[in-house]
Image (cartoon, rainbow, N blue to C red; front, side, top):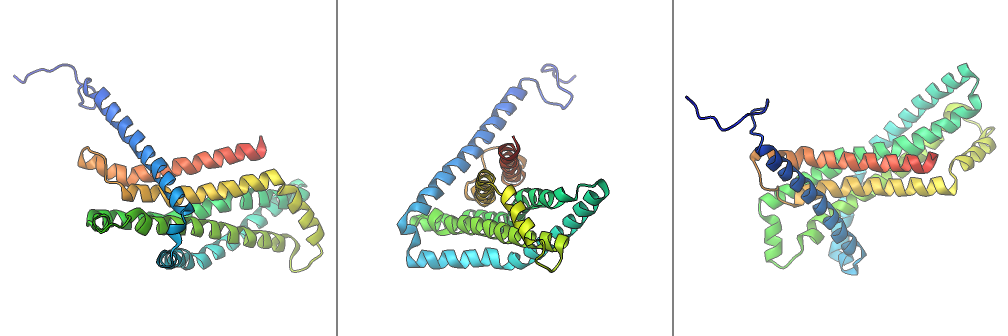
Length: 278
């Protein structure tokens, strides 16, 4: 006969182990968010420090910005232009069928420029730039490169992490700004064509949409998006995994970082929608 230690749950776990697992999960969750907040404060201090912009640091930062922005700039801008033309055509044709033509262009700008493009730019930069940079940072930590920098008296956060974070922020803001400008041009061309007849009405409508409050929310949302996609993957790569099983450590460094990033992006988007429309 096998010894009996008490009732088991349907998943095969002893009921007494459930509180311990829940507590361990809460500790890992709190530690991960604390590391992100702490790293954000450290990066903010370094950004405001003049010593972070010495000639060697400026050269390293410029190379990182160029490497993270240039390869994806043209492709994403072309994608934004194509998306703008398609969405503009769909919205205008739909508005014509319902007799709402006067609201079609305003709807395109509100949906496309204010909401879709900044979020899409942030996600594109995360997938193509900042998440791979976080993986590179994790490899540097695993191979002992960061520890070697510490032993030589250098700051690995200043030398390896700060250029990657600032390059990610720069790439996200650049893609969002350029793509929004292209989307505005494509929306005008999709409605009025290659002539200036609709320019006065278009500029008037543009001023009605981009009020000071909405412009402020748009700028803050774009900045927060860029900070989220640049900082959270770096935090996952810089810090070693929390203690636990191999599967728990893998989840924490991989899916856990992505889940936290998407949660922050969703929170920012929700708050911005409330600020714009409530």
